[in-house]
Image 1: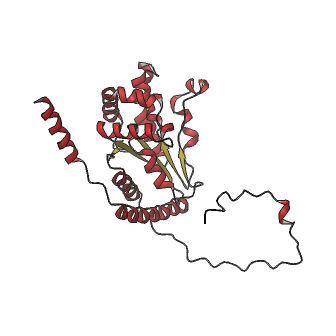
Image 2: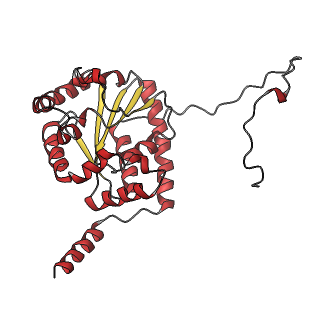
Length: 280
C-alpha cells in the first residue's frame, strides 16, 4: 500500500511539471530576447541608468545558466557579473555590506549579482557562519540599505530561482556524472542538500523581512531550465522601460593604402599549431 501511494505521489508530481520547451521554440525566443537585451543595454548606457539585478535561490536552481544567457550578447563593460567568493579575514571585520558596495554600478551600467548580500540570510544563517546578533542586524538593516540604494537612483531587481527537491537531486546527480559540471558541486552544496528544510525556513523568514514594496522578490519557477531562462529574461526587459536606440547601419571607411611599408617575415612569428589539420 505504501509503495502504491509513493508511486502515485511521484506520478502526480511528474504530471505537475511543465513540459519542456521544444529546442526550436526555445532558441528562436532566446535569440529574440537577447536582441532586446542589447537594446536595453544601449538604453541603460545612453540614459546613464544604474541597474542592479540579484540572483538568489537553491543550489542547482539554474541561476548561472540564466545569467549566462542574459549576458551572452552584451558588452561586459556595461553589463558586469559579480560572483564574490568567501570573505577574507579582513572583510569579516568590515561593515557587512562594505564588500558589495564597490561592485555597485556607476551611471550607464548594469550589474548582475550571482548571489549577493543575501548570503547572510541563507548559507551563513543555516551553516552558523554568523552570530545571532549579526543575523538579526542584517534583517533590520537590509531593507534600509536597499531603500537607500533606490533613493540614490539605483534600480534594484531581485530574483529567487525556485527548484523542487526532486529536480535538484537530478541536477546534483548530473553534476556528479559529468566532468565539466563536477566543479559546480561543492561540499557546501552537499550540505545544503542535507539541510533542505532549514534552508526553506531561512528563505521564508528572509522573504518576510526583505520582500519590500520598493524592491520586491520575484520568484522564478526553475524546474524547467529553458522556461525559467526565457521567463526571467522577458520579465527583466519588462521591468525597465526602454526604447530602441539601435544606430543606423554603419558604413566602413576604406582601408588605408600601403605606402611602402614591408611587414616582418611571417616565419618570425610563433603560431598556434593547427591540431585539426587532418580533420577536414
